[in-house]
Image (cartoon, rainbow, N blue to C red; front, top):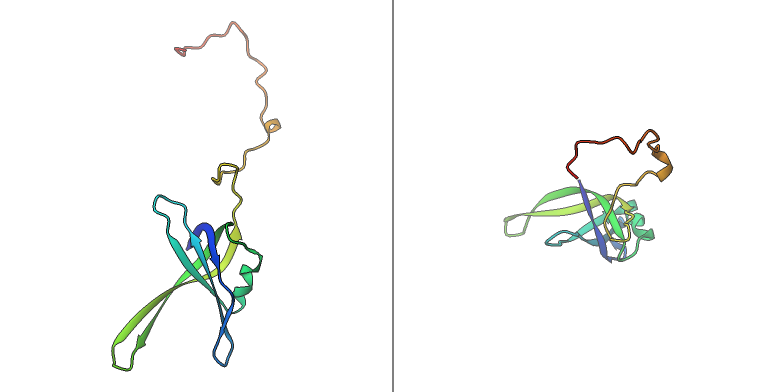
Length: 125
């Protein structure tokens, strides 16, 4: 799965526990009619992937949905979901801010050389 949008926040790397578990969070705002602020976490060695990105950049993040079960001291079972990133790449936007496929150069098209002024077609305009 993938999430695309503009980086809103890049958090600092956090370290937890005796074994040095590392986590870093990023918030991406989607660009659609109702924008969503999606928090994605990168863990362990994947935290370094965020080093070369900045707030405001357009990105595409490859994600996995993770879920886990936890039983609290009162015996109640709780469920938690997380969105975990494993790859991030910058998206190049054109001047209007929209992503468009590349256009071949003009010399890739052959000119029509056999046109005659006398040829008429049946188009009404």
